[in-house]
Length: 100
Image (cartoon, rainbow, N blue to C red; front, top):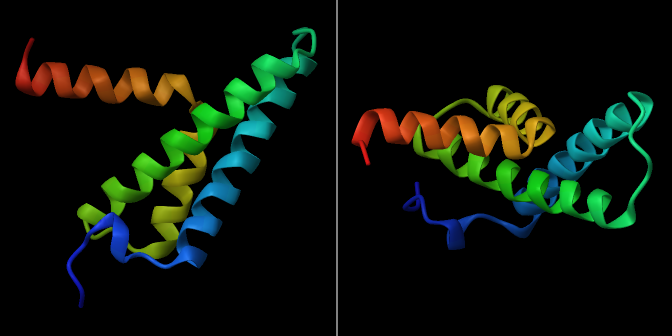
């Protein structure tokens, strides 16, 4: 098996990770709209960008931990749906473990 390096994954892998992340971010934004938020194109783009970033980071963390593909996809989708809350949670874990 090739070394786990972000440059060694196929384009198809990145397409499914980003597509799943964008889908999850869109669902999250639609939920916010149903809760009373007014539509804003800039907020929507920010939500999608954040979800894509979080989904990609989650994918790499799952790959590093040798998590099986189906669970990997679930974790990517959930973390992408969480968006910035997932980044905040990861930041707290890192701070507890490694300190300021």
